[in-house]
Image (cartoon, rainbow, N blue to C red; front, side):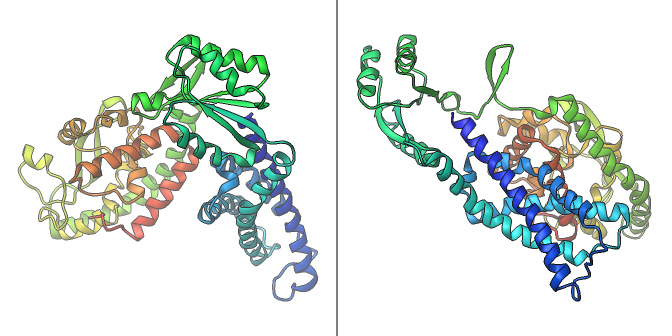
Length: 462
């Protein structure tokens, strides 16, 4: 019931948002044509229909942003609503102006389209803050609330109250909280449900005894009420899990892996090729020339620094980057030593390359040949790999996917030297989040943030 009500609320909200913004498009266009055509160049000779369709297509493509918010849609804070609206309107803007540039259309006013997108963005924020809760009251608040009985541990009442508080907009009402502390489970449940017209039972954890679990099921079936079972396997394992179903069997796994789906892997690979091929052909050659010339003056030696790294499933590969340090005799201690702020081994132009991430550009060749991806966990030196594996128990899980030129951790400012266990654990956490939540949109976001850091490096870039 809860899943369907949440899904229905999301879909209804999305449909109404689409209709409202579509109607506003035509209302705004007619207003501009009638009253403001002298300041915003939009006449009746212009054809706004293709751009109306691009707005609709952009909103449909952004529907997944609503789904990602999920049950929180009816209780978004202002910042969350603004972020959701921004992500949706970025997609709409890309589709709209992509159409304009593809068709070289000069008849439509860019000021009209830009001002519409800004006003639509502001309207989306208001709609996200007000419309879902109004829809929930309209569809789930008019009838009788659903009395909900909770069954769990003796110390679980606070958790049940918080769970219900976040879902009252779906028409739920607390009807009581009982525990199954004796073998008379059937009698306990029957007494709690007697005379209360219970519509739903929430079992906060699966009882250790099968007989008690069956007693709850039978009591719910006898009274025709819904049963919702909350699994506590994450608490028992001390680790987040993802549920999967296969041929009627249900399993739990430590990580979801969307990149194990062949189509997703193909999409990610196409994204890698679409970005890396032009950069390798057009940008890398002149950049190599510039770096080679600067090295001749400041630190003569080879142009590239090529060292082994662990790739997908720990397969070794030679990672390429511009050399940013003076030549020195190879030693194991130097290989293990991370680059630090004001590191004397780095020549002056090397500092510039590292700070603006330009030293990583040759890795687009690694991407092109399939050894790396644009986005993924950053590979480190083999000796550090071994050390980090001892410090972070989940570290090796990063190797389930290809390493990247940049990653979720790097896009959030976690770059440079790792000097504390907390820094390492946070990077691993973000890498594992990426592993379990990959999407093309997430790759685009990470790549865009990294591109911005080239021009505005974070303090951790050195």
